[in-house]
Amino acid sequence: MPASIIDGRKISAAVREQISKDTADFVAATGVTPHLAAVLVGDDPASQVYVRNKERACEKCGLKSTLHRLPSETTQQQLAELVQQLNADESVHGILVQLPLPEHLDATQILDAIIPAKDVDGFHPENVGLMSQGRPRFLPCTPHGVMKMLEHEGIKTSGRHAVVIGRSDIVGKPMAALLVQKGADATVTICHSRTSDISAIARQADILVAAVGIPEFVKGDMIKPGAVVIDVGINRVDDKLVGDVDYSAACEVASAITPVPGGVGPMTIAMLLQNTLHAAKHQASAL
Ligand SMILES: NC(=O)C1=CN([C@@H]2O[C@H](COP(=O)(O)OP(=O)(O)OC[C@H]3O[C@@H](n4cnc5c(N)ncnc54)[C@H](OP(=O)(O)O)[C@@H]3O)[C@@H](O)[C@H]2O)C=CC1
Ligand SMILES: Nc1nc(=O)c2c([nH]1)NC[C@@H]1CN(c3ccc(C(=O)N[C@@H](CCC(=O)O)C(=O)O)cc3)C=[N+]21
Image 1 (tube, rainbow, N blue to C red):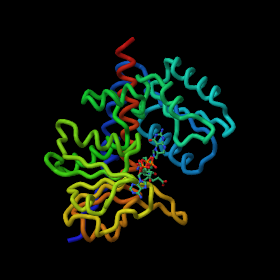
Image 2 (image 1 turned 120 degrees about the vertical axis):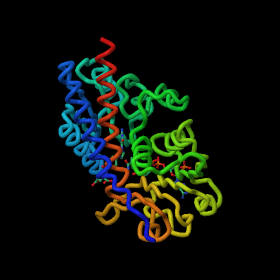
Image 3 (image 1 turned 45 degrees about the vertical axis):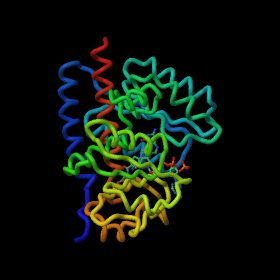
């Protein structure tokens, strides 16, 4: 039987509908509109698309968003100054600095400068630490979106073997952290570019998460029959979006799979809105 398709657009629409309601309630109760400030340095075309999608999603859910565009020659100090200004601006609840930054800029230093209370990406070391201790403040949007999808589909993780391919700070590592935490209770293996015999490990997965950044890296024979396959990859090939999984081959083997586009991507944006609302609620109650 071919795999069932996990529809990220549909699930994210349901999540966004709830966010719209919660936002309207919050605005009615406080007079404050949750506000995301996005910072885009340079003119990378993919980043432009993502940032526009985020702005549109904010607007639809009743959140305010402002985009700060900086030229690619921006210096470290200029960018750091903008972050400081947004940190100090009480009307801004969430700050997102779109990655990747141009090569001459030190992304770690910039991300560390965002005050943890406005770090809606969940990248600040304080928020990473809180997540890994199981007392989260902001969860990183993509892994959180994946957990929401699994939950929505009634896919249980407890006691199952999850294999995550990729160990980046924004996807692979936090994905593994969420799957292994108490409550999710998966047994987790993390693979990366130095892992030997990745195929053999991937084939043991009940839940296989691909976050590699290589188009169609995961072949059909790397998937255990009946496994759930989550494709985080977004690769532009000949003007088309392709995931990190060979989708048509995987459909023949897996029990359920996320498509690209229309899978994890829309969930990432929904979780960003949720974090921005959460940030506004916290900042309002701290006044
Ligand atoms: N859907 C969404 O919302 C999002 C999608 N993405 C997409 O997800 C993918 C991954 O993103 P990101 O984590 O930022 O990417 P990175 O490039 O930061 O990380 C890729 C990871 O894959 C590993 N890797 C690379 N080559 C191999 C290989 N041959 N075998 C095994 N492992 C390998 C790397 O290993 P090592 O550490 O050893 O180098 C690294 O850990 C990309 O396609 C990106 O576009 C990203 C963010 C959000
Ligand atoms: N500070 C920061 N935070 C991020 O969360 C962040 C980032 N930088 N840099 C880039 C990656 C990538 N990312 C995506 C978000 C949405 C889609 C998305 O909506 N994708 C649609 C298609 C979009 C299209 O058509 O290109 C889909 O998969 O259906 C994809 C990728 C967030 N990232």
